[in-house]
Image (cartoon, each protein chain N blue to C red):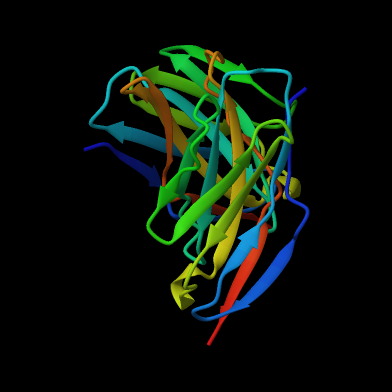
Length: 116
Length: 114
């Protein structure tokens, strides 16, 4: 069975600093996608960044980047120059590319607080 | 562009009453559709998913049911609500775009069962 683990229930960071959120996953598949979603207090789920497992290059979206270590099954999210608006729950998610149902498997989330 | 609607946004219902939550998608065709529940602001639990009209897969045994009467409409129902049905319900859709599967979420419905 595929699982996603986020070992940090809560984290905090000072505004303008950098923070890294951890995620590990377990799968026997070789072809899959990984995602980070952000859920602010409004509770809207927002896709932050995506990584295809076949790509060695780490994905980057503005201040958000990932450290994808396929052999270690690790997928951490780095937020640079943290802003107050980054305060949210962050969920790591996995999907098997060959899964016809397209079902996402989520971690339990990390609650990030950005402090002024 | 693709848009997903959910209603109502909030709902307070007594135990034993029926439930109907609706989700509709615009701007895409033949999407996979999903219902998730999120309790106490934590992880998302997949309840149902559908790969086509009338096709429903249930992930966990529960008091709820789902239906997909039209390609872009997904309904979550219950005949008799339980206290444990309280939570935040998210509808999502996904398609393969440019060779990549994308999944997007609706704004959610906060359900309180009293």
